[in-house]
Amino acid sequence: MRCSICAQGQTVAGRVTVTLERDVATMVFRDVPALVCDTCGEQYVDAKTTSKLLSQAKTAAQAGVQVEIRAYAAA
Image (cartoon, rainbow, N blue to C red; front, side):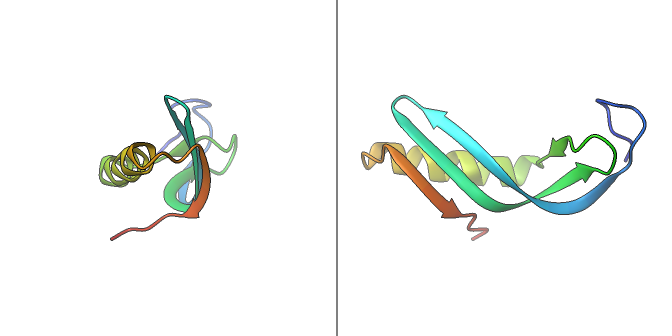
Protein backbone atom coordinates (compact mmCIF):
# COMPACT_ATOMS: atom_id res chain seq x y z
CA MET A 1 0.00 0.00 0.00
CA ARG A 2 1.12 3.56 -0.57
CA CYS A 3 2.05 5.54 2.55
CA SER A 4 -0.69 7.99 3.50
CA ILE A 5 1.80 10.28 5.29
CA CYS A 6 4.47 10.94 2.64
CA ALA A 7 2.46 9.68 -0.36
CA GLN A 8 5.74 8.57 -1.96
CA GLY A 9 6.75 5.31 -0.31
CA GLN A 10 5.34 1.83 -0.30
CA THR A 11 4.78 -0.09 2.91
CA VAL A 12 6.64 -3.32 3.55
CA ALA A 13 6.24 -5.90 6.30
CA GLY A 14 8.52 -5.28 9.25
CA ARG A 15 8.86 -5.27 13.03
CA VAL A 16 8.61 -2.12 15.16
CA THR A 17 8.66 -0.93 18.77
CA VAL A 18 5.40 0.46 20.16
CA THR A 19 5.16 2.51 23.35
CA LEU A 20 1.83 2.79 25.17
CA GLU A 21 1.01 4.86 28.24
CA ARG A 22 -2.01 4.28 30.47
CA ASP A 23 -2.41 6.28 33.66
CA VAL A 24 0.96 5.82 35.41
CA ALA A 25 1.97 2.74 33.38
CA THR A 26 4.34 2.88 30.41
CA MET A 27 4.60 -0.26 28.29
CA VAL A 28 7.16 -0.76 25.54
CA PHE A 29 6.47 -3.62 23.16
CA ARG A 30 9.29 -4.77 20.90
CA ASP A 31 9.11 -6.86 17.75
CA VAL A 32 5.54 -5.84 16.87
CA PRO A 33 4.50 -6.81 13.32
CA ALA A 34 3.62 -3.77 11.21
CA LEU A 35 3.78 -2.29 7.76
CA VAL A 36 6.57 0.29 7.50
CA CYS A 37 6.96 2.94 4.80
CA ASP A 38 10.19 2.40 2.87
CA THR A 39 10.57 6.16 2.38
CA CYS A 40 9.57 7.97 5.59
CA GLY A 41 9.40 5.11 8.12
CA GLU A 42 5.76 5.65 9.10
CA GLN A 43 4.42 2.57 10.90
CA TYR A 44 1.02 0.96 10.40
CA VAL A 45 -0.14 -1.62 12.98
CA ASP A 46 -3.28 -3.56 12.01
CA ALA A 47 -6.46 -3.62 14.12
CA LYS A 48 -5.96 -7.18 15.42
CA THR A 49 -2.43 -6.44 16.64
CA THR A 50 -3.53 -3.12 18.14
CA SER A 51 -6.30 -4.87 20.07
CA LYS A 52 -3.81 -7.38 21.50
CA LEU A 53 -1.39 -4.59 22.48
CA LEU A 54 -4.12 -2.65 24.27
CA SER A 55 -5.32 -5.76 26.08
CA GLN A 56 -1.81 -6.60 27.27
CA ALA A 57 -1.25 -2.99 28.38
CA LYS A 58 -4.55 -2.96 30.29
CA THR A 59 -3.67 -6.19 32.09
CA ALA A 60 -0.24 -4.85 33.04
CA ALA A 61 -1.67 -1.53 34.30
CA GLN A 62 -4.23 -3.39 36.43
CA ALA A 63 -1.39 -5.46 37.91
CA GLY A 64 0.37 -2.27 39.01
CA VAL A 65 3.13 -2.17 36.40
CA GLN A 66 4.66 1.27 36.10
CA VAL A 67 7.31 0.66 33.42
CA GLU A 68 7.78 -2.53 31.46
CA ILE A 69 9.55 -3.60 28.27
CA ARG A 70 8.45 -6.84 26.69
CA ALA A 71 8.46 -8.71 23.41
CA TYR A 72 5.11 -8.65 21.64
CA ALA A 73 3.15 -11.84 22.28
CA ALA A 74 0.86 -12.71 19.38
CA ALA A 75 -1.06 -15.36 21.31
